[in-house]
Length: 60
Image 1 (cartoon, one colour):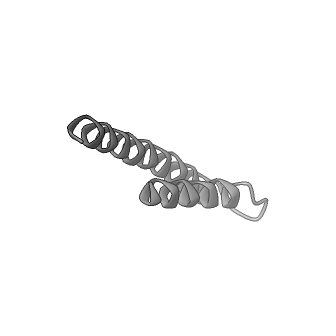
Image 2 (cartoon, one colour):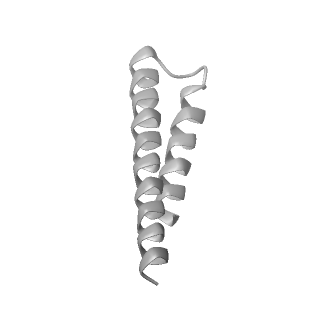
């Protein structure tokens, strides 16, 4: 879950930076895309961690 947490932290940082009034449209787009990508990455990592946990619980 540490990897999922790190991806969520990256998504949060990108989303926070995208709210700055000092950035232009291209920077906003880049930061928003990063936030979305990191969010999906976090979901995938969390799903994998859950699947691994369930596998180990069933076999143990």
